[in-house]
Image (cartoon, rainbow, N blue to C red; front, side):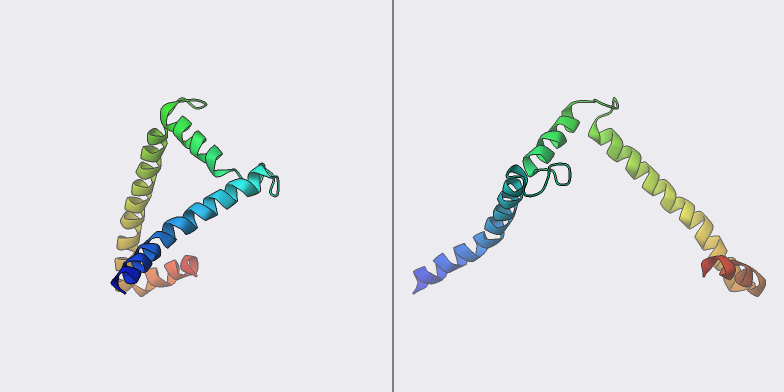
Length: 109
């Protein structure tokens, strides 16, 4: 009886991995068999190859993937601080002065 529980527990732990593998294999087959054109859906192996290629080769734009990630992160952080720099003072002014609140409400609606 204990052996059945252990076997069932192992199978239950494997189900998530099996379902992900089945999904990826199905996806690959759908693209390879032409059910969905490659122009509309890239195969998982193609995506993996291109990802590894972009990690190691700086073509076509002369930068590796980590450079693009750093630029995107920099832009997101900069945007966040701009939002803080504008939003906090504007919120305080709107709370203190009804005229400013009325003026800002036109743009917030």
